[in-house]
Amino acid sequence: MILLNQLLQGVFLGGYYALIACSLSFMFGVMRIVNLAHGSIVVLAAFLLFVLADRFEISPWLALVAVVPVMAGLGLLLQRFVLDRSLRGGLLVPLLATFGLAIVLDNALFESFGADTRSLSPYIGDLSYNSWSITEDITVGQLDVLILAVAILLLGGLQVLLSRTRIGRAIRATAEDPGTVGLIGIDARAVYGMATAIAMGMAAIAGAFLAMRATFDPYSGGAQLIFAFEAVVIGGFGSLWGTLAGGIVLGVAQNIGAAIDPSGFFIAGHVTFLTVLVGRVAAGGDLFRFFIRRRRA
Image 1 (cartoon, one colour):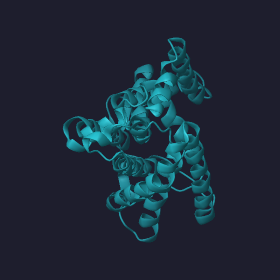
Image 2 (cartoon, rainbow, N blue to C red):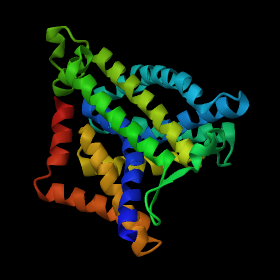
Image 3 (tube, one colour):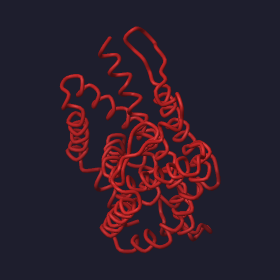
Image 4 (cartoon, rainbow, N blue to C red):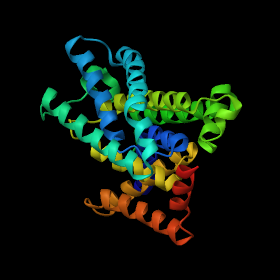
């Protein structure tokens, strides 16, 4: 029964990792960019929501309605002034550009808010600690269930967008061959801007749930990036449902590791990630060849 509880809690933790990772996975799927500023962007959204809730007494749910389009607008600016130019410089330049952006964001947040940790849990009432009892030994948090449901809905919505809409077809065509989509009337730069805006909007949603389920500070972005990156690699770069599966595998591994030894939480997750990564490289290095091939297209 204890093992079943660990597995169940791992699934819910994996839902959170999938929610954090979906933006990173989406950007790679469209633009072949591993956004090293992803964690810092999520934390930025968390701080924006905290300011609205703490200083202006706006419900976090209502504040999220305002922050999502703001973050999407920032995504357009990010694409226009940072990513668009860095994409012309080859494989390494976007990594360096987003790494530099992460440093700027982290230190700007530190200068503005200090090193104190913050949380949105006091602003969401009973949801932060209420749970449902399944058996005498198993309980599930209501917030955890909500996070998993939002992750599934968000990934499902993205899948429908990509497969059933005209915008989605343009995004998929640009991801497949950005060099020639102009011949059929698709502006690759506009598609990239739209994709970055969507990714930033998803990062805002992830930032909201980060702030609700835990504490955060200006330098929390690094840990969020690591968890997101591991979930994406385990599930497969660019695969939306794979991101959900990768997050769940990571969460279950961490919870089982913690059950074996208190220090095993992070170790088990990292070992699982490295095992999957080494396995893929040993199988033919497809992960890295895929990355390089798509960026050269």
